[in-house]
Length: 106
Image (tube, rainbow, N blue to C red; front, top):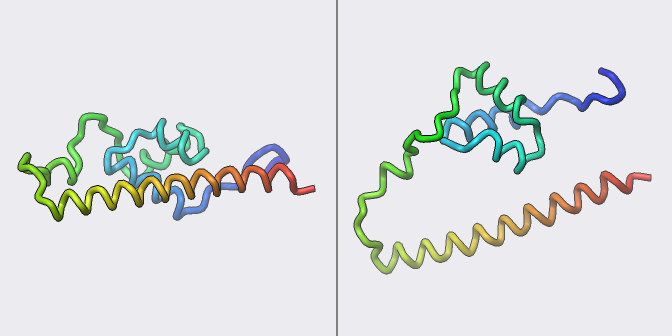
């Protein structure tokens, strides 16, 4: 390994990226979100036999029946959205903290 090269991504991380692409997530978006190179994700997917298809229908999309939500489902949806916002905020804070600590190792 040269001085400028990064260590290889852990196998678990690579597998998660492949699974997300298999579920319909865009490799370019994943590369921006997780800070790895787009071509790396493509290589991992190619090795796993997974091809990104932007118009593929996910399991979530096929489960939707078009019926309006009942009050319990609506409440659960609101709670899940609130939890998602909190988790995204926590992720952003952790990413900023990680970057700060990486830059201030001295």
